[in-house]
Every structure is written in C-alpha cells, then in structure tokens.
Amino acid sequence: MVGRSGVKGFALILVGGMAVLSGCVSRYSIRTPERDALVAEIHRFKGTPYRYGGSTPKGTDCSGFTMTVFKRFGVNLPHGAYSQSKMGKPIRRQELKMGDLVFFKTGRNKKINHVGIYLWDGKMAHASSSYGVVVVTWVGNSYWEKRFAGARRIVDF
Image 1: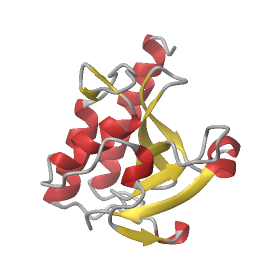
Image 2: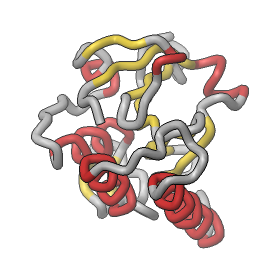
Image 3: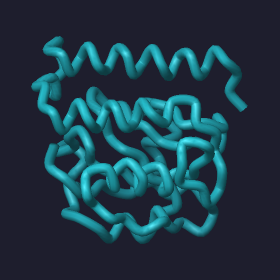
C-alpha cells in the first residue's frame, strides 16, 4: 500500500505532465482539447484505491480504470484486460502515443491480465494492486519490460 507520499508523488507527476502538454520537450507536447481532457480524466482518478471489479473514483481495478476513462470519450470498453486487448488497432511498441492502451501478462497463466494508459516519455497510468492506488509508472522498468504483451490504439488523441 502506498502512503500519502506516493499519492503526492502521483499528483506531482500529473502536474508535471500537464506542463509537458503545455509545450515542453516531450514529443507528445502538442496540446489539444482531447489530450487535455484525457489528462484531466486520469487526474480525476488520482489516489483512487485499487478495488478488484471496481470502475469508479471510489475504487477501481486496471480495466475498470481504462474503461471509465475511455467512456468519457464515447468509447465503450469491456471490463477485463484480456477483452480490452482485442479492441482497437494493434500497434508496435515504438509507435506508442498518448492514450494507447498497454497490456501485460503479470500472472502465472501467461494470459493478458493488466492494462494501463500510455501517457508520454515511457510512462503509463494504471490501477496498481501492488501500490494499492492509481499510479503513473515507467513502462520500461525491468518488471513491466519482461511482462509487456502488446498495445492497442483505441482513440487517436
């Protein structure tokens, strides 16, 4: 479980991310109303506790988080990482753009069971059962790198 400092760190990452959207160095720094809305929707989940089967800012799991965020944009995703991995257009890792879904196999059964929303510069937002809240983490760390199972473009932000 992450304490207050982890939640504050998440808030700082999102605030910093909003600065990136304002025109700093990121290759995803072109500000659009859709990207601003995506960041705002993700920010709404800041500090949301992890709850298996949940899909609200009071408690959510990974696919509930992505499902609810994308609903804001008129996209109906199923509740389940594996089911979401069949939606949209498959993309290669080097083609990742803000808003793409990234999928992972974290369980023993080698089935896709985790999903996050790619942000920029190698970061994703996701509901983490390990941290116990919605967090932003680096997709390229050794844990996620080994478990990466693909990406899909649902909406072109």
